[in-house]
Image (tube, rainbow, N blue to C red):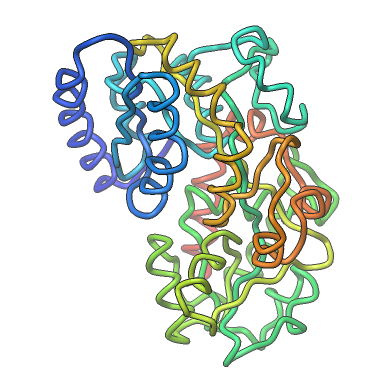
Length: 351
C-alpha cells in the first residue's frame, strides 16, 4: 500500500505508543483495536467496546491512529493491536502480505448473518475478518451551487460545465474506488479497469483539487469552494445532522459502490481468542443500529433499522445494498499499488 510520508510517520508514532496501552492492561484477555480517530472512534467505544466489556468482562481499548492499515503494515508481523478496522480492500492487501489472520466459518459463526457477497476471502477461500458495515459511494454536492437533478448519472461529472468545480479523492482511494466504478459503468469490472480510464480522465479534467482528507473536502463542499465530488454517504449524513444542510448526497441511476469495512485480527496478534470473540459480537443488532445512527449501514441481515434512521439514510438498508455494487476487494487489492500509481498519473496530467 502506498502511503504519504506523513501517514507513515504518524503510523510509526502510533505503533510506538501502542505497547504502553497493552502493558497497562496486563491481566487476562483484552482487545486493543486500531481505528481511525474522531467521531468514529467515539462510536466504537460507546456502541461496541463498552457493551462488550460489560457482557464479557474483557477490557476494550479503541486506539486512535491516522490509518489502521498503515499501523499494522508498519508492525511487520509484530502487532500491538489485536483487532483492526479497515476498508475491505486494505485488509485484503495486508492479507496478501501475510499480515492478517486467516479465519474459518467455525471461528466466526455469526458471519452467517452477513450475505456471502460481502465476505472478504483470499484465493484459498479463507476468511479475512468480519464484514462490519458499509457506506456507499455517490455524489456529494453543495445545494446552493447545484441540485440533485444535475447528477442523474455518473457521466454528469464529465460535463465541462463543472470545469474547475470538482474535487478528487487521493490516489490511494481514487484507484480502488473511482476507477473501479467507472470501469464497471463502461463494461469492465474489478479485474478489467481499462474501460474506466477515459472516464476518470474526463472527471479529473474538471477537478480543481485532490482532497487530502475527508475533513478537507467537507469544508470545500460546505463553503462552496467546490460544487461536487464522488464521496461517502455516511460523511454527508453526519454533516447534515450537525446542521450543515447545504451539503447533500445523491445516488446516480447506475448506483454506486458498497464501500464495506471489516474488522480483522492482525497476524501474530496477542489475545487471539478475545479478538475473535469481539469480531463475533460486532454484528449484534443493537450495536449495528447504534452505528447506523452515525451513517454506517449494516451488512448483516439480522438488523431492523428504526424508521428515523431509514429516513436519515433516504432508503432502507436492503434498498441501499440492492442499488450498489460490491466488487471483489481481494482482486482490487492484488494490484493496489499499480492502481494508485495510475490514478496519481491521471490526476497529475489533468492539472
